[in-house]
Length: 215
Image (spheres, rainbow, N blue to C red):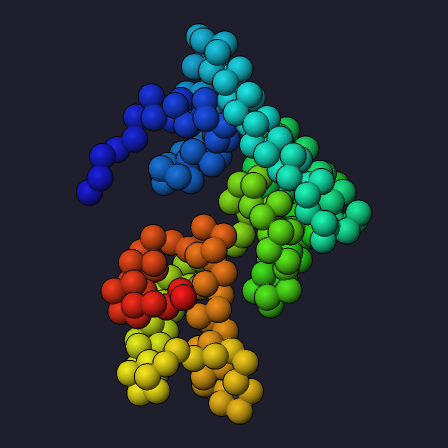
């Protein structure tokens, strides 16, 4: 069992721009109010805690805003939504929910859910995805857990394909559904690696089992 996080750990992460709710999730704290109470006391005792939190959160938001002019594929509507999302995260320290909030949060939460669906369908442009990713963790945690559970089996299938065919699968092969499915998965991994989104555990397993998988 790892070390239990202390109040100092919570305060340190809060200074870095992480919200109280986010800290509770990171450290698996069941009593969120305990975290929020601790942070409130820390801010009361040392105003720099709140100042550093606000400054680091603003820096994260600015990282998105500063990339927007170079994202040529962003439509005005998409860009406007990203700017709304940046403002929401800056004010609330979290991503919007689809329900339980006000009308504006609900609308923004539903839009963000639609972008998650576009990721699953392979329809979200990488630069649009990067703009959202600069704001923090916005993609579904359930999807990440599902991909982690599926990874070993898909890796074995990929290794078996390579051993059998002496090559890697291609997503362009429309005559073989099995190869195309493996090829699409491999292409997705390569994209994730190029955008520095591929988990280290995935990369190590691929490097060990499929040398040259990302060439």
